[in-house]
Image (tube, rainbow, N blue to C red; front, side, top):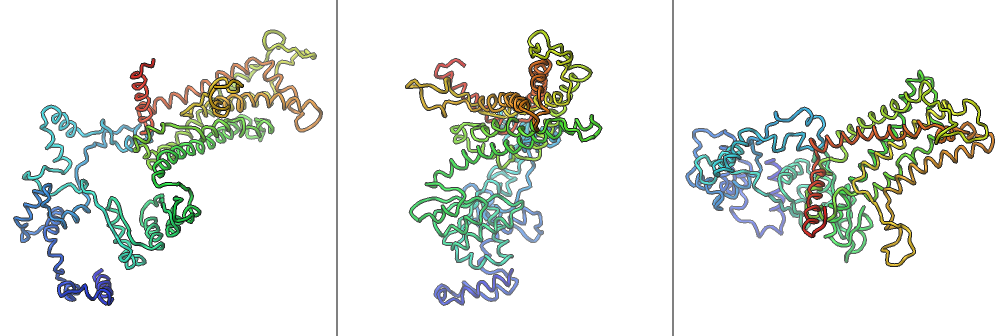
Length: 578
């Protein structure tokens, strides 16, 4: 490092443009090559002494001067040495944590999605000493010193004051393009720059070239572990390289042209729109896409797992449980449109609440919606639903459970054939389609349960009267239309159309003839199971959600409850009945 510093200094002074800046004391060759520090470092004696005191490596010969002790004791009175303040602020603290990890339960370690709950950073996880100090401080303000001593922070001027809390210092780094010209490209200097920059709250790079902007961003992606998601925003052609180097590029359309906009992923008109883009649309879309991805994995895994359970019962003979044409419509009737509408319209928190509480944006970086634990929860509920839909549907249909006279009552056989045994319906087509129907109902209800904002719409949706508000696209209850018409009702309509086409003559649809008639018209047990099985599956799901939200809530769930309380309070203020 000394050799690198020497070469940089020699290159600087060899430039004729810098000759007028050189004085006798500015550059001393012996200060670079010898072990004696240059004169400029004599100003940092107090910093070195405080660092050595902090690390516990002071010898008996090194005695801190009286002036240094006074500066350390009066750090809050702006008498602290600036060099000591700067250097000490980069040293991590070793203060005692106020939380006791032993108070975490096994369920919090295994099932909690929120990192604060999982890591034991809640009020109930506070250590006994800290709780006692808090209680004492609440009564007579006597526990404040104990709290600060526990956290490694002492009052200014107290006898035990030997350092300040580095966490209370906000640091910033300013670097110019002329300095980056010597740093970028050298691995050692880049790592040194990044070590200082990573300890700073913010870094300002001024008078830098377009290539230096891109290299700075590339350096961040290179040295940060794990690799972060970077965002670059610019409004001119000199920002194109930086925008293309980042994971997410945002261009501002303005007076400098459209080059940045054409090279970006998103375009905004003004810089102030970045807040809405990140906090509102970015957060909502991440939540929606996470749910959509997990749900599509869930519903397809549920379909395949049900057939795997049946393959065990059929001795792995390869017999298909579901009819091929019925199976082909699952990706449409199996809550596809409900989850698509949820991925478009769903909102867990309102716009106003998010803008007033921007900390809810942390739900994305904290991986509340897409994480290994969240994925495991979906896997568990998928397994529960698979066993529910099979073992609550198949056993009642076995051993003559589906046999019915089909000559009296609501399920009477009014066909002209009226043959004996026509109402039994014990074929594999009827058996498999009954299980398939219950699976469709469960998946549809699951999509409804995962939707945080249900769109009820306005009635009537279609009207010719004037003064009824906006048009029908804005009055439609998309949630209920997708769940009913485009899922359940369309599935039943498809079964009747499938049978009707099969009656037209020998074809690939012919094996399904009279299956729908026996399934829905002659067997009351089909409708009973269609109500009981999805209800039992949803009881398991709701029970798990209630238990999770009560004992292991996420930050988003807590904010949703706070927002609900605020809405109730506002309604009471204006005289609404809650």
